[in-house]
Image 1 (cartoon, rainbow, N blue to C red):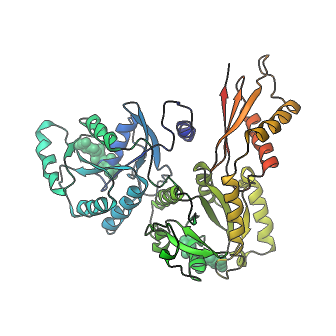
Image 2 (image 1 turned 60 degrees about the vertical axis):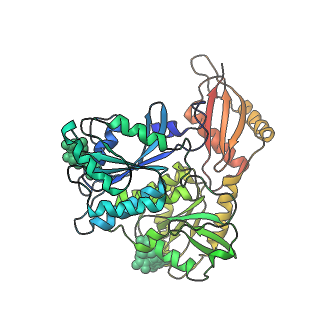
Image 3 (image 1 turned 90 degrees about the horizontal axis):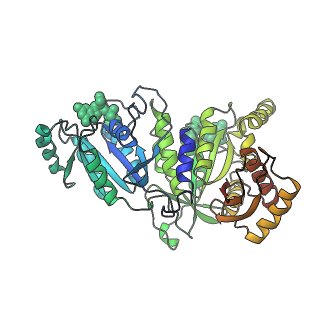
Length: 455
Ligand code: GDP
Ligand code: GDP
């Protein structure tokens, strides 16, 4: 439901007046309890809270499609993760860092009834360094009498504080106008993947599957001097490594190295990090611990990769612990949980012993090649012409929708548009996807098929 709405919203070409490219990203950051979630709900036009701030509650949505004054954008909500009193400074800063990274513009929320705190000052430093546009929200200004409170926030040096009551809606339209004024039409953050240069890989997986072990196995061997690689602009959280004799970017590795997410709320937090990494990556290696039963968290990460339209490699780690019996179990788990994702290359590795780690390269190359693939319109239509002639769409209500023409609108990942005379059922779309994969491969890449109905 929610996810479908999201996909619809992101579906390219649905709204012909919309600019091409990913929707711009607006992130809402700030200390706990300043009213971020309340503001998110206000913007999304919902009455109820997104999710209560209950410790241990899993929040796996990070961003939501939103609309204001006829413009569409993605709203990143960082309000839901659990925090402990001790680590509060570090975690707010860390959360802010990720959100800033993902965003094209930021709404920084401060509680005007409290005034600027040391943590707020810390976040301001990060904001300054990022150079991204910031709108300062002075929240909990519920009445005109309290506007003097907002004025104290000038001291943060972020320009005019916008007095807002997220709770009652007061001033929220004005601050949104201000945010949209500095938000670009199309996302330039993360989501825009630089062309050329080393390819960009995200190492993903739930905690303890062996990400940092694999990172060390890869990065430990050969160090690369960044300046040696032409045309690279280094993001401090990315690492350049050599695999198969070529340089690759491992994106967003800082979080893997720091091993931050150990407390409750970690699910949401991990998912936020996964999304941030995916936005920068072209291909993701999802690590699964082969020695234990696959979990929903594993499949969720895989689904996140697919939803983000990135190429995918699944690596079964800790293979040194896998015996005959476990192997049979694993086969059944794969059949059960990954039946829809048979197109993803799977490799078995051991980060600990480095067994088969070199096989990663071939899998990455395969998935990326598929991700880059363009099929000519001629080839595509002669294939689909034969396929649909031999296997026509079922007749529905006395009508038989036909596919008139198809084109590959885009690659990275491959996106196809079918022009049809009527509604094409999901089952028939899946059939076409399956056959497209049989014919053209697409090993390791999600593909998207959309249908336009022509009268
Ligand atoms: P978050 O942790 O930053 O996401 O903060 P919440 O949105 O959960 O809000 C924390 C508390 O502040 C809740 O009790 C809200 O009802 C309250 N709150 C949020 N916005 C306002 C506001 O504009 N005015 C007042 N008076 N309270 C607010
Ligand atoms: P991360 O949380 O995904 O970064 O996981 P780590 O790399 O910290 O690994 C979690 C635990 O699994 C550590 O105790 C590692 O030593 C262990 N581990 C990682 N890779 C392997 C492997 O290939 N084989 C075995 N036996 N243990 C591994």
